[in-house]
Structures are given as structure tokens and as C-alpha cells.
Image (cartoon, rainbow, N blue to C red):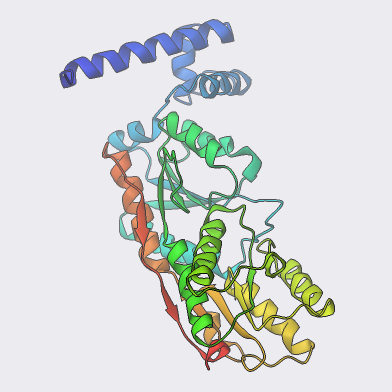
Length: 349
């Protein structure tokens, strides 16, 4: 039987008092000092505040300053965080990042909030929690899961108000908003197969959840068309132009035959087209190319680039609305956004 709401609140408060007592004992301070430190009081020196915050994180203590600040109308700042991943090396100047930041800025402003842009090391996502724990922001929109699903689950277990742009994964405790990556990969591959292409290169790192799902869609399309996937055509490259160029050039130098390329971002696809042109290959006559994200620059390529369109402006609104729902005590379920293939001359018959 579900306990009455009053009982639940009393139980939650009692549990929080016990956690505070544990933190006080481990830190060697009073419970009142812990309370002041977790509320960002400058009456507690910075070193002690940091020590207490670290203990709170280790004990999965839910500080929940975001909801408190929202209720008291002290803070109207939403943090938008783009982790820096040393492996993927995707720069903040990537057109996708700039586009989704624009959508988020518009959505946050339309709803009467301020946006704080931050970049943290993807290997230390706990730094994201400090933005809320310190009262700097009421909640976080994180752009990308990278390889840190477990870290994000730990943040969610602490009740950190966070929404992530990314893929839906098994045993997921946090809210994601993202495009239908499996469908996107399949649409791109099916289109190329319909053009008679049989040896299709896949450019992207499948260790990243979104890319892994796109690869699954690509493989499913090949299998459905009775075309065997070829390991040598699946190039696990990060979102980095130099790596993509080197990978495609290596295929050409080794004389590995291929007649199409799917890049897991528009920049990867454009890099592939540049290398093909440098090696005397015509796009699309010799090699058809499809990108992903459908950024505005796809119209200005030579030839214009076919691309899987992601609804980036809608994504900004969905990310912000999911976070605000969470801050108001509602359950924010993952949201899967539709994608579609926009065909241009780079892959036309």
C-alpha cells in the first residue's frame, strides 16, 4: 500500500537528517555546519564546504538546491554543459553543438530563464553536480552521454536535476532527449542500397551510444538487403575532421573498394568528400555520400550533401521542458524525436 504523502515527506526528511549526521561525523563538524555548507553559506570556509560536498556526493546525498532555489525564486539559471572528451575530440565549434546551443538559448530565454554555458572533462562528470550543489544553477542540460552512462546514472541516483541529449539505453535512470538513431542509420543505408550501392563505408565511433545505434540501423539495412556487413568498411573514427580524412585516405591507399559513405556527422561526411575529390573520385558518380544532422552548411557543399535531419530547434524546447518538469517535481520520461533523410546531389542517382 502506498504511504500517505505526509508520511512519505516525514520519512524523506528523517532520512536526510540521518545522512547529514553521517556527513557531519565523517567531516568532524556539527550538523548545522553541514547544513550551512550544503546551502552554500560563506560562513563556512571554502575548504570545509568542498570537503562536505565531496562526502555528500560519496554518500549519494541529494542536496536538491535546484528545487529549493526554484521555490524561493532566488535563481533562474540553467546550466548547459558540453563535456570535453579527449577521445572523440569533438570541438565546441562543431556545427551541431552551435546549432543545438542556439535552440537551447532560445528555449531557455522564452521560458524566462538565464543560460550558463559550461564545459567539463567527460571523465569527471561529477563536476556537473557542483553547478547545482553550489547553487550556481537550478538544473543542467548535458549535451552528449559520451561513454559515461554509469556516471550519469549515479548523478540521477542523487536526484540531480539533469536532462541529457543522447540515446535511450538499458537500465537508464536519467532523462534523455534524442533523435531516433537506429532509424537514422537505417534510412541512410537503405537510400544508398536503393541507388545500387553495395560497399557502404560507415564513419563514426560506435563506442558512443548515439553512433552505436546508428551503426545498428546501418547493419540492419544491409542484412535486410542481403548484403553482408564488412568489418573493413566500418571505420571507428571520432568526431574529428583529421581522423575522418585519414581513415578514408587509408581505404583509398589500400585500394579497398567502396561506392558510398555514411558519415555520423555532416563534418565527417564533408571531410570524406574532400578526400575523395583529392584522389580523383567523383561524388556521387563514383562514391555517394550521406551525412548526419542536416546542418545548414549541407546546402552549400559541392555537391550539396544528403543528410539525416535531426529536429534541433524542437530538441532545445524538449530538453528545457523536461528539465523544468523535473524541477517542479514531475517525472520526466525519455523522449525520442523523429528523424528523416533529406536527399541532395551528393547521393542522387
